[in-house]
Image (cartoon, rainbow, N blue to C red; front, side, top):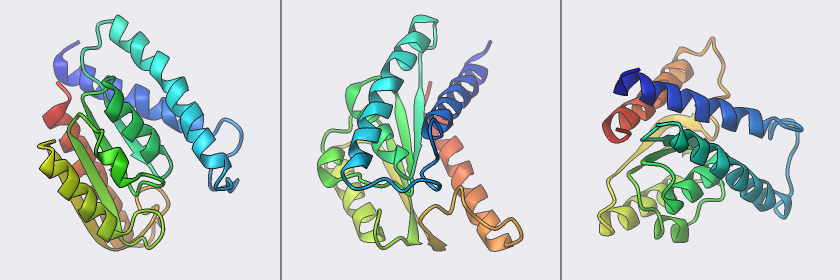
Length: 182
């Protein structure tokens, strides 16, 4: 298996694992976690992911990237802080803080929504960029116009504007991994 294939394979494994974990009981869309529960869910997802990444590394996977959607963004940030991944992408992240950005040690892309006024407003995405840039961490931030929180996963397939925005975000994510996960 060549480098490119390993990158894609590893990304798919991690992505699927995180998607499965997020649906273990009920998905976030089906069950609203209280503000007290959600950090515990994110900590458990982070702790459950670490041995999987360590197992991948022990089977000659040399580079791993992680993508975090919504509350998975916090999990991806935690992995970007602990040295188990080579790069991360956050897509409309939730519960990620400026203090988190001060501990990230790998290249990080953050894709935000223009109409996300609660989870990760554009102003916060810009602040994340300032922190990462000041720390000389390679980063890429983008605010997608006309979309709301969750636009990369929950969109109307008949809305061509929404579909194009989601596709562009997915391409940005893949290009980031191709560049930094080697």
